[in-house]
Picture 1 (spheres, rainbow, N blue to C red):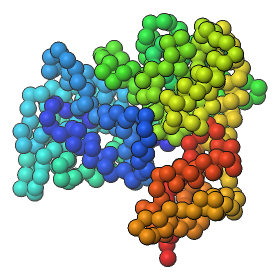
Picture 2 (tube, one colour; picture 1 turned 90 degrees about the vertical axis):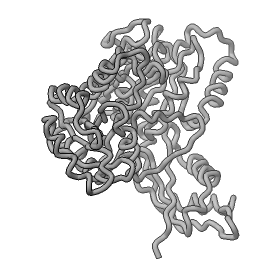
Picture 3 (tube, helix red, strand yellow; picture 1 turned 45 degrees about the horizontal axis):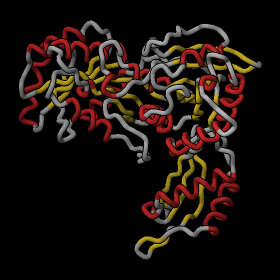
Picture 4 (cartoon, one colour; picture 1 turned 90 degrees about the horizontal axis):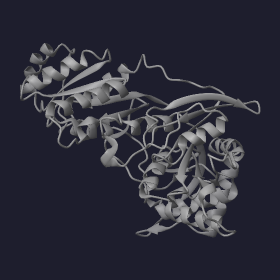
Length: 436
C-alpha cells in the first residue's frame, strides 16, 4: 500500500532532481529491465522504513514560452493539488531569494506538511547558513547535500511522518479494478457499459475525464470498485496546464487496483503510446487484461481475431501472460465477459502454491534443463518458497544469486506457468544466497 504522495518544488538549479534521485536510490527493490516498458523519471516510488510512497519531481517539468514566475506557480499548483506533502528545496549557498519567498508564500496557503530542504550544504562549516531560512515561515530547515547524500535520511523521516494523517479509500472484501489507456480509446464508455448506466461523462474530445473516479457496485452477489482514469498522454503533452498531472492520477489508480484493464482502440489500432501505458500496469505487478475496444467498427473475417491477437502479442511481449478480450463498449458487445475474467485474473494474483509442490516443479525443471554455469561455477537451487501474493512472488535459495541468468529465470517462470494457472498476473522470482 502506498503511504502517500510527496512532491519536490523549488526554483530552478537548486538541486531538486539530485535530491529526487537520492531518495529513489534509497529504495531496496527489484529493478526489472524489460524491453518495451518505458520509465518516466518525473515520478517514482520511494521506500523508507518498510513504507512505500510516490514522489514527484516537478523540476522535470518543461514549459516552453512561459514566464519563469508562471512556471514556478504551476509546479506549486501541481504539488498542492496532487501531493499529500511537499519538499521545498532551496540553495543554501545563495541564501534566501525573492523567488524562494514567493514560493514560500504559495506553500503556506496549502495547509499541507512542508519539508524545507536547504541543499548544497556539503560540509559542516556551512551548517550555520541554514538558519536564515527560518524567515520563510515554513518550519525547521534541514541541511542537505543531494550530491553527497547528507541529510537524505532526515528528509525521508519527515516524508514518512507527513503521511500520518493521510486517509486512503479502503474497499475491503471488494475486487478493485481500473481502466487505463491513452485518450479517446473508450475508457469512460467501457466503464458505463460495465455499470450499465451513464455514471461517467462520455465525450469524443480527448481529455474529458480529468480525475480518477471510484464507483463501487455489486453484481451477482459480488462487490466491485471500478476506477476510471484520465487518459495518459504522450510525455511532451503531459504537463500542459489543463492536464493537471492526470498521469499521476492514473498511477495512483493502478496502485489501488487489484486488476488493470488496458484498453486499446480497435478503430485507430495499436500505437507506441499504448505500450507506454501498459508498461505502468506491468511494472506495478497488478493483474492485467488487454481489452481491444471498438471491435464493432473493425472490418473482419473469420481470421481477423487471430491476426489481431498475434499482433498484440508481438507488440506487447512483456504482457504475454495477459488475456486478451475483444469488446464494443458502444454496442455493449461481450461486456458480460469482463467481470468473470476480472474475477479469474484476481484469483490468479492471489494464488498460493504449497512449498513441497513448488519444489517438485522446480526440481523437475532442473532435470529437464540443468542450471547454467559461469566461470566454472554452476548455479545450485537448494529450495524454493512462495513469500507473497499479489503478485505471486517466489524466492529461490541458491549458492550464488549472481548465477541466476535472466534467461534461466524466464525458463523457470515458464515452467511455473505450465504447472499452475497464473494467466493475467506477473510472477516475481527472487534469488537469495542460502544462509550457512
